[in-house]
Length: 166
Image (cartoon, rainbow, N blue to C red; front, side):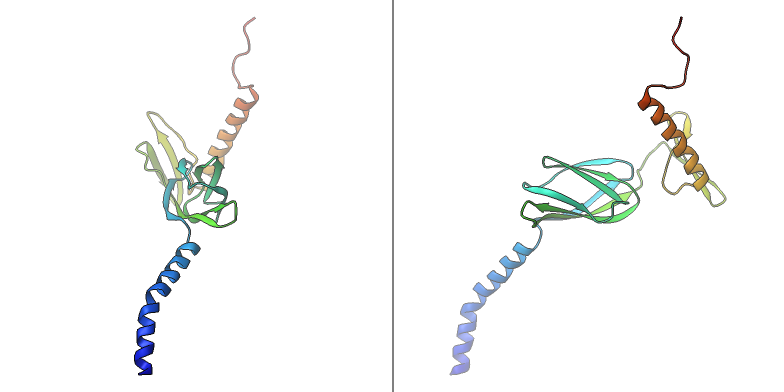
């Protein structure tokens, strides 16, 4: 008799208990979770749920993120996988994504192997050095130095070339 009463009691209470547990799990889980793929050295624009105040990137060597009024700019920095967590003003997780940074699928990319060293070129239509993660150290540093010097010249407005005509 007691066993039957307990069984009836449990059946009546089981559904509300299971519903309460399910709601608790939903409250503790992020509102949005997914997988985002971005190319290395490229940016991707994403809309985030309302109320996001803070963005956290697990490994900033793989990806970087900037939040501008509900719009996220996600930039691939290095190959690999990391995570992105979006927090609301109250500190609760609003979104949680896995971020995978991959190589761009570029028709103009030509890769040359010299023994164990690798060199990358953009060939559209002429081949020029391209700074790409995974290239040989000497080649990478030379290409990066040239690109940096060029950017510095452009920023200072003193690009080499003929002076003003007299």
